[in-house]
Image (cartoon, rainbow, N blue to C red; front, side):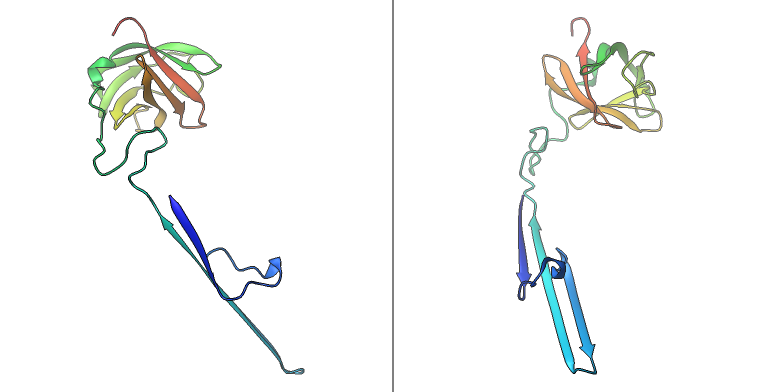
Length: 170
């Protein structure tokens, strides 16, 4: 990403006279008893360009040839029991079911899981993300593959770091 800031006109004498970062400002003062006229104007512009060929925060290419979904992720590989945990916190065993449920697949999450995930009852793949949602399609947590079958992610409500580890052989 690149950006530039161009200011037109003379610089203000003091910080309180500084123009806003973007837009235009004009002040006119006229005093009739002393014949004082003061006119001050300023203009500022900002030019922002976005490099849509750059990698995203996950290190994935978002250029024109980027794939919507990874070829190596198949929903069938995700069916079964997983350990869902919060980094530095508690963990539990959840089940990612193979039965369709409200546009995704069913999920079973017991009490005792990390805070905020008990309402999860659905999962789906969206692009490179594994989403855990509720029936209203509210994303509770999102994950990305991080190697050896492990998925790393965050709880949407507060950004807490979560992980999913497969149980048994896959």
